Length: 113
Image (cartoon, rainbow, N blue to C red):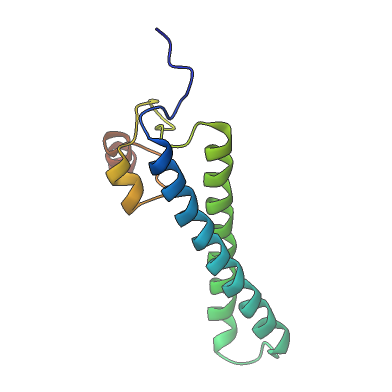
C-alpha cells in the first residue's frame, strides 16, 4: 500500500508542535533582522563593527529562509522526510533540529564527503 502522506510517521500533535516551534523561531529571527537593519541604517559603516553587522544580517537572512522553507515543506506534506533518501526523520531528531532536511545517515555522509 502506497503512503499517500509523506510525513505519516509524525502524528498531528507532533507536526503541530514542530510547526509552532518553527513559527516562533521565525518570529524571533524576523524581529532580530528588523533590529539589525535599523542598526545598519544608523551606522556610518566606518567602524569595526560594520563587518560584524553585515555577517549578522546575512546569517539572519539565511535563518529566515531556512525556517520559511521548513514551513513550506510542512504545508506540502514533505516535512520530516530525508531530502536525499526519502527515509522518515524521527520526531526526536526534528524536535532537536526542526530544520533537519536529512536523516542521520545521509547527514553523516554529507559531512564526511
